[in-house]
Image (cartoon, rainbow, N blue to C red; front, side, top):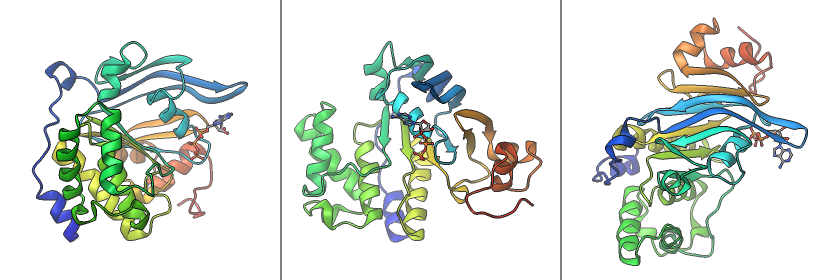
Length: 273
Ligand SMILES: Nc1ncnc2c1ncn2[C@@H]1O[C@H](COP(=O)(O)OP(=O)(O)OP(=O)(O)O)[C@@H](O)[C@H]1O
């Protein structure tokens, strides 16, 4: 555990308790979703859930359909076929209630580099209708939690890649969502920063009960106890606890299971065992 992680772990928890009815629902329900760009089918009958307080890895190579799925959950694209719910709230019928419970970290950086850390957070808080006073309190709190309190007034441009990602995650949590989507959140980071970000997100699951959907193409980011969705060419090929998916594929590790399920070479280029 790094000093920053210890700092994070020692912070008081926020107040993210969902309504009782919502607590019994899956954090995210993807119900028979299909999506096409013209003739190109990007998602074909995809069906899975993410439980509250769970870490679900969405594993797929480039073009698998991960970003398309995220664009549907965040309502960037309209749903063509199927239904998506967040804690039981249908995102098409009751988008306000659904999106209130959702935080998102997109693959491209979306921070304003020339604003300070606090300014970036206050801007996001204003978009969510959080009062200025409350936003200042929450910004100070989250900056403390990610170990960047002393950088509050610095320009974001001066942060490292890993620090920027931590800030983006903190920003995504500012309105206290119960479900967090992260799209290839560790791309471009060094090994240490990648591990720190993963540790941080896993702590959000275990300590705050947040449901996480973590899109990745990196096998080494996945633990046997995680839930796993394998997406390939728009189709969901497996869903379940990683250890079960591995066993059902008759494999010894995620890498080999993925290769057997998809019939592809893995990104590592290692031959099948
Ligand atoms: N705006 C678009 N117009 C046409 N086709 C698209 C569009 N966006 C994605 N696609 C296609 O849809 C399929 C799924 O793409 P998507 O970006 O969702 O996959 P991905 O798993 O996120 O891949 P990556 O990791 O490379 O972003 C691909 O065949 C892609 O070429």
